[in-house]
Length: 514
Image (cartoon, rainbow, N blue to C red; front, side):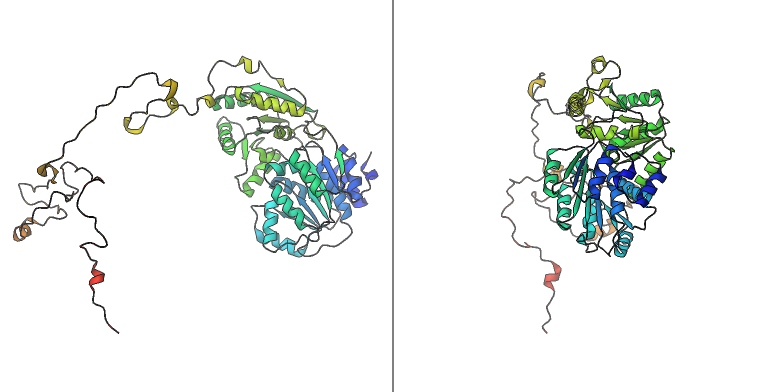
């Protein structure tokens, strides 16, 4: 079957031929006729099978008739990440080169003013992430009442990122009579419920069994100890020993591990660049561009790069961490082996990852081959994760303080009770602060607070001795012992109410009568 048999317009067929495509993929061959027939479509296919073109090409054919209105887009495409939204915009630019269609991209990290200007002029295709789309709607800059076709792409990724409430809200803002295209790689129960709620008598298309990897990908498991430095060393050996390595994506579970691993690879001479969700939009686009051009052939990324990145020439994928969700494994390794090319994926596994690997094999329905002896061949040693929370791993207390005794079965050594120290009350002479005496050669130059100069001190009358209960004044030059702190149970007489004996000066000022 060729693209000419699918019912696409002549302008779209010319653009597809110019791009070098002649035969549609299974998902394209099955979905395009139903989209042109204005039916709702539920498409299930593994990543890298051409799902983007499956809805882009028929949308271009449908949009040839009609006219865009200000602030009311004709079609709406929802994407989970900025990178995937930008990639869909590139597909519309490539296949719509022979048409005069306006396309707007609403993503975070970009000025609201530029996006509002495009929406005001009117757009035929609006590509957006859910958060930024709702921001424009709440500002009153965008109306969704004119949407004729709604596309929800990577629905399972939307679920993982917590966008399902936003998707439900958007579906209530668009007309009830719209056409809905729903594409996903996996079908968890929540996605099934959403599809049944917002699709009307859809055509279910399964180009392949859900949650399966392409047969062109060689999958291997590599055993490693749980220490981070050992895992990084294992990764460096894999990068050096990989055959036909052109470029590679290294996936980590956490953003901070992405930054740490990126610095480690650069330190050891590997040309690497990092990509994670905390980076601003300019840095993310620059990192992807440097990876696409080959300037930095190693991309260390989080799962933000696991969906929708169209880089056909990725030769290897390395899972530095085993993904927590088994579905993410399918999307990660789907970055390689695209468009019928050969690819390879290596996953570093520790003793704590056995359950995760079992879940992945259960989901994909096929075992993954070990490269080397496996976990049984690891040298004996206690992984780092098993030592978390132990007191012997913590640093001693500051100042040589004594650590708290162990509780439970580990507290086997009996500790002798410390003697109770009873301090006697200080006498009047010991409690009184000592004054700094002037030098024998002459009077001191330092004036102590509360003391007068020797010449003026003789003219002043002697002060009455302070009662014992009063707290003596301690100056910066005193050397006497610090008096005991006042306790709450000391009986110093009745408690003072109000201002006591002291009245502020502003209350004693005369009041002028007007």
